[in-house]
Image (cartoon, rainbow, N blue to C red; front, side, top):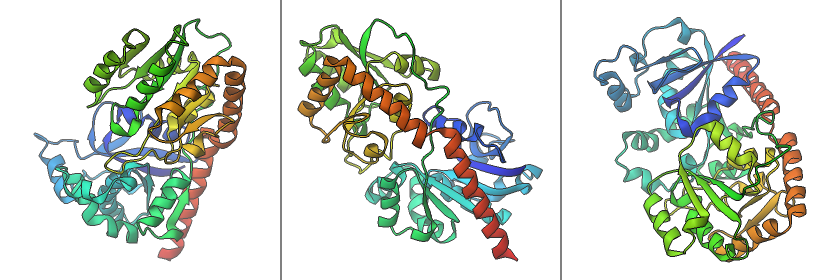
Length: 380
């Protein structure tokens, strides 16, 4: 079995569970994790700059220099056939290591890393952000393949002058055996939302929309999972709108709890929008997870969401920031359970066909094979 290095600056990360999910469904490649900082124990072999690091000095040096020599010598590294880095900034740090090992580097772009305005990276206090901008041209030249998680991201990569011949559009997929509909749901009726409390998620619009339908649907709750810098503002808005008794902010929750809440929901709603920084939703795996559970979606015509949610078939999409249209779509599904059930059923079918993680990971391994073969042929 060929050895694959999966590179992440920090791992594991609560908001990036999809990386582990993808790794766990590989069948032809054995994943090894390469990290600057390992945040906790993982169920895979790996190597990190953090290993034998005193006072974090090596990690700080790596952030500044990107030097592959800061990784300890390990047979794990020399056995790798290729490196797959998730997110553009992380890939900038994987590039010197791939060159040092003389193996190809594949980069997956997930959204903010290609949609955020360059000025935000320029004025960021983050060294990683500045390294990303300084070395992105080098990545364009030396990276073997750039995977776009949606057609929307593919277009963004082309717009940012990444070599078109190196770009492959590939959906990550979800576990349709884990995300499944329930035969019997909870009697409690609620609209469910998962998303960080940041501008991009459009939660203010969701609250404004929900406030418009609470009198017509007094028995329906809005349950929201997530946290972030806008939490206080959102809680205050809930009080100002007079809907505090029908809205529950649960904060961050374990993956199993989120799954249970999703499966028992009547509607899933997340009205994502373009942030002032340019940050946009690449696709939104959470939409695929909800559809896999047979839940109809209410969202927006934004980013890659129309690729995940088929308007009028698996859910309803409205313009960004349009609380009135969003409220009408919520009302339509809450008022017509037959329609909601039909859309949820179509959503499940669509995800099983287009986004099943076993199918998508098999396609990913085909990409790996082609990249490795081309690299070997080039080196002969």
